[in-house]
Structures are given as C-alpha cells and as structure tokens.
Image (cartoon, rainbow, N blue to C red; front, side):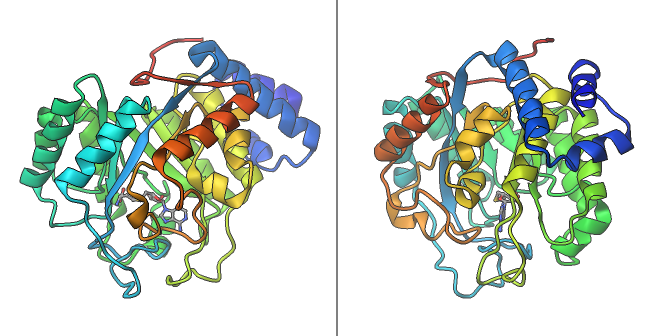
Length: 348
Ligand code: SAH
C-alpha cells in the first residue's frame, strides 16, 4: 500500500482501481502513512499555517428541499431567522478584532436577500474591512447575480457540488433541483474570476465508493481553489433521520488523497468532522487540511442554523471559540495565521 501512496504523491493521479484500494485502507500503519504524506505536502506549500475563516450564518430560510439538510423548506419545526445588516456588521467587527481576515456569508437560498441586498452587504463588509476577503456560500444563482456580487467585491464562492454522480444527486434532492445546474454554476463562478470551492459530504445516504471515485475525478479535473469535505450527519427533522453518519476515517482518507492530488488546495477541517469525532478537526489538520471555519454568528441564532444534529460550538461566543480552537490547533503543532489566506499557486 505504501508504494501506491508514494505513487499518488509523485504522480498525483492513479487508476480507478488504485484509488478504490486507497479508499479501502483500514490498516493503521497504512492510514498513518497516507496522512503523513499528505501532511508533508501541505507543509511544503503552506508551512505550519492554518487559515481561519469567520462563518456568518446570516439566514436559515431556504427555498430548497435537500433531503439531508435540517433547514430545508419542508421542515416546519425549523425556527427561521435572518440577521440584519447591523448584526452582520457587528460579527465582522468582532471577527476582525479576533484576527479574522476572511468572512464567509453562508445561508439557505433565501429570496429575501435579493441582488440589491447582497450587494449592499458585500460593499458594507468591504468598506469596513478592505483588507479582508469576502466569501459567499448562498447556493445557486444566475450568472448575472454572480457577476454583480463579484463586481461588488466578493472574492470567493463556496458551492459544494454535493456529488459528482447525477444518479446519486437524484437520491439526495427533490426533482426540481438539477445536478447540471449546480455543476454549471461552479463553472460560471470560475469563469467570472472567483476563487471557487466545491465539495461533498462523506457517507451521505446511498453514496457508493464509485460515487466517491467520481468526486475525486471531478476534483482532480476541476482543480478548485478550495474543497469542503465533511461527514454526513443525520438531522432529526429530515427524511434521512435514521441514516448512519459518515465515518471519520473515510473523511480523513479523502482529505489526504485530495491533498496529494492538489498539494496547493485549500482544505478545511470541518465543523461536521469535529461533530462526529471529539478531536475530528485536529485529526483533519493532521491528515492534510489547512483551514478552519469557526462560527461568528451571534450565539442567539447558532442553534437555529441546524443543518445536522449535535453541531458543536453553538453555545460559546466567538472570542471563546477562537481561544479553544487556537489551543486545539497548537496541540497538533500548527498555528493560526492572521491573513486573508488566499490560494497559493505553488508547484511542489
Ligand atoms: N445553501 C448553500 C449553503 C449550504 S450549507 C448552498 O446550497 O450551497 C453548506 C453545506 O452543508 C452543504 O453544501 C452540505 O454539503 C452541508 N450539509 C448540509 N446538510 C448536512 C448534513 N446533514 N450533514 C453534513 N453536512 C451537511
């Protein structure tokens, strides 16, 4: 197995059969070898730096009915909220004070936040903190809207592809949602000039190893600037409530494999990983991840932005959260970097 891992590290590609063998690794030594190769690559490009992104979950209204997501439009038990511009601004001010130089505006697909409102919010943040990057994560919009947000100052866009298999996509989403449209959105975002992030859940219902292989092939050819990988976690008010959560090991394996395919990629160690495993985020960093995205949303709404059950960090204020995270990051030999943390185009 070690030869195969070395081959991936030097050639950045494998045959389908070989990738599937890596996804099947269970031996502890082989796993540790995979993680350590990924860690070394990450350190060649980004050293010991961990980039932090301040996540502002500004609305949990959503027009979509994704079967896995706790804030999907069918969930009548979701307690809906929207942050005001003043609330968003105060998250940004507090985040800036704490060392954040990237703010991620994430939300459901909420028609209330039309282009005009989004442009106002983007400009407001850029005006308050011109040295910061603004990342949007607000789902599928038209090319015109994406262009307008980019012109208003948005730098990056996170839109997980969710699954590179159209058949699998159909099992996770209602019929009115389209895999083609989501994939086209990613291409459009790239064309406009955004730094783009795709990604998928690990262990989402009905996902096969072949689906994960398609994800790897897509990530390999699309070469996103970022890639969000986290385990699926069931939410009690969704049709997937009784489905098992994705595994920590499979998530870590994928992080390492993706790091070896694209040494320069920005790879978050996700909150979902920290939810399925107590030291999940630390393990993610040790498997090749180099970004963490702590929550800056007001504590009063944290519980309400409930994509999945038992989400961590819903009770502590931003300052407390970043203190805890700093200790966790330092416990595995890395350090928080106060910087926009842009994608580095370095060949190693
Ligand atoms: N509305 C935006 C943001 C979605 S929330 C959009 O469409 O892009 C961000 C990500 O959370 C989703 O892309 C999905 O991959 C993940 N997510 C949603 N429900 C989840 C669950 N039950 N378990 C784990 N991750 C989940």
